[in-house]
Image 1 (spheres, one colour):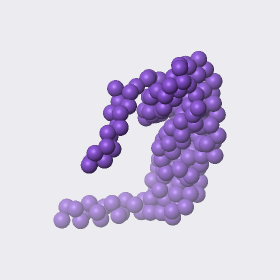
Image 2 (image 1 turned 60 degrees about the vertical axis):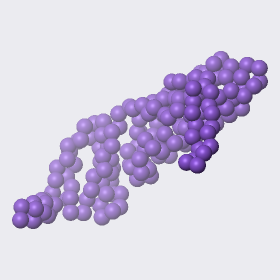
Image 3 (image 1 turned 45 degrees about the horizontal axis):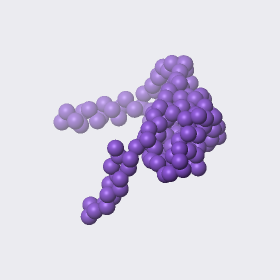
Image 4 (image 1 turned 60 degrees about the horizontal axis):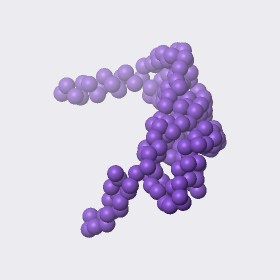
Length: 183
């Protein structure tokens, strides 16, 4: 009986216009009957919850720690070596409307595109190249990531390596599938 009363009160409450107060560092979209209708930003927004849903995201500068990647490169003598790399991307949402309407989850998309940019920047290079030209490689990664996410309303401020480590990786094959062990 209590659940029925609660549901009834929720239904009644959905008919009442709502007030939403946002800070200057928030933005988003008002979805009206399932379609993006307007950009909402810092200040006061009135909406009808019966047919309007607000999707709010932060516009503050943020960082994204990328997953570790294992890359095979050339060593000092030209021999293949395994290197584990990780990077950090500093970014902010510059256009909330595009970020909300064109992407499902901007962190996931940014992360996936950034991992690809790291791989592309390291392709064909040696460990000495990374250690001596780190700033040039980071600038190359930033250009590629920025170009990939600009249309989605994301501005990339900086990309830098957080880890570059020589590792040994062994691939084990067995009945349960493939496993990689790193030392």
